[in-house]
Image (tube, rainbow, N blue to C red; front, side, top):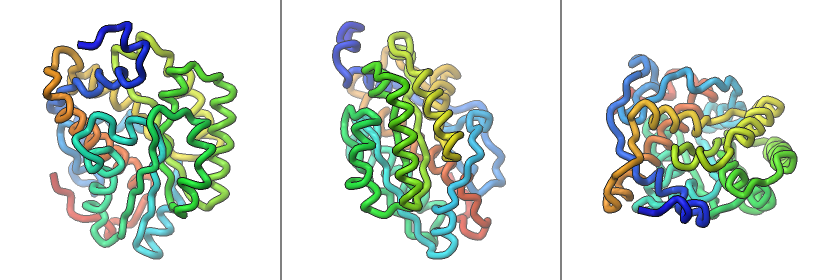
Length: 271
């Protein structure tokens, strides 16, 4: 088991807590009648966690008019799928799989442009070349974790978000911001909340949707759906795959709600 001192010295060790999770059944199933409600029990989260009411206007228009949806994910280690069994197990790939399942007549693509350990500023500097050049309808921007770990100046972080969101909007694309991850071992050492607050404030000012990964994972962990302690190292890859699959499904849930598509676009819910 990696010690506390090592967790502070090495970025990668932050993820040990995430990969050492064991998923069990949830306690709060969503209504069974919605086309976006079919969710494996291990992945379920109360609806009260998702408070954003921003709409993905460009993405919805593309789906309705052209029956296609182009998404680009940008982020750092977790978006790359660190600890997963393969690239197909990373959450952007699982997001694509779930959207394709739920929108069977829509050509959905999710391209992953993540790089390890990047701050928001590093991501923003390559938005034009690595993301917007692909002409996405939706950019899923996971950020804040590396900034909190490195104690990046909050004003600088906020300005970077503002500039990045403005650039994405100017390219006629929607944005979904994804907040940092939650793990009990790390929140005692690192102050994530100010960075999450900055993301929420930027989201409100630019009317962009937010996926509350921090609150989602906190529910999984604190409710007992995830247990981070005393899991054998040989199980970490399997558990990482499960975690990323749940994240991909929940991000798909937020995307579909924010697009507010007609019911006839959806497949019959299945588990």
